[in-house]
Length: 320
Image (cartoon, rainbow, N blue to C red; front, side, top):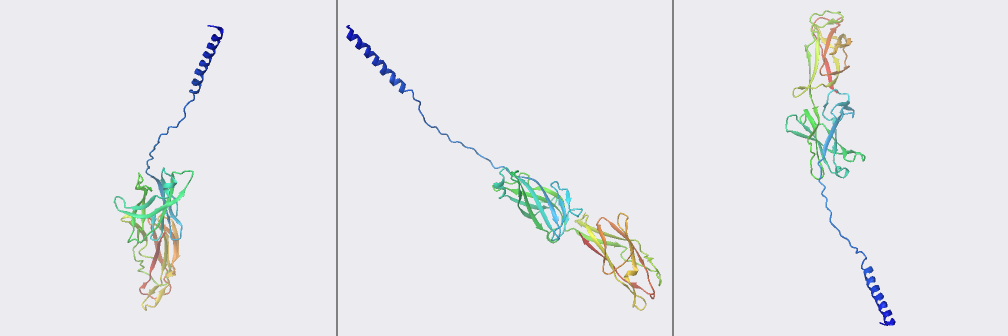
């Protein structure tokens, strides 16, 4: 091979090698594409829970007569026992827990009920509405409802207070009915006795001073109960009297102020001594139905003719 031909052969070889390298470099660029998959999650509705409840009794003047805390203990009010009268207002509160939070609370059906102990009988007290919501505690809300108590022929005696709750999806609270109080007395029946029932002086003479009655002492007892169960009701007591009229001519008078009384409460404390009887009535104080009140009576006759005299002593008893 001559020199010219040898040179051409080398050139051709170089060109062929270059041609082989170029296609290999272009084929190395990566592919680009997307792959999408569907995701799925199921959230189940959780049942609400009634956490606690409390109530307050408002008298006809709007004063708190009795109020409980969330454990059912008395925390306010002038009554010593939980009782309520016709036309007074019972206000019930319930705290509800719902994991769904505020969006669900607005559509809860929350109700308060009165339940007879040991009986399936229930009286719907009130529908309750959301009363308080704390954004810092988004799973809990307080509901409130109120009811004016009807007359005793509709509602009376011992009831428990219970709460029911259903969320907007129709799921009831897992712990309903939930009792928040077990001893509410509604329209208890009150009665009184005065023993002996007649105050008698059988051996009086004219112009005698402060002669004790033959029938002393007299016991006044005021009672309150619901279906035989005693209720410790507070009451206001007043006394009043009339003149004693009579004599042989039936025209003589011993003024009621000539009749005096001593009064001792059930603890043995003497509240009044030789207090004259008056008309109109006189406030004696506030008492409880568990107490026996002892009274002793005295009469000053004055210059009157002999004969029988008749008058009255009355007590006004007002439940509080």
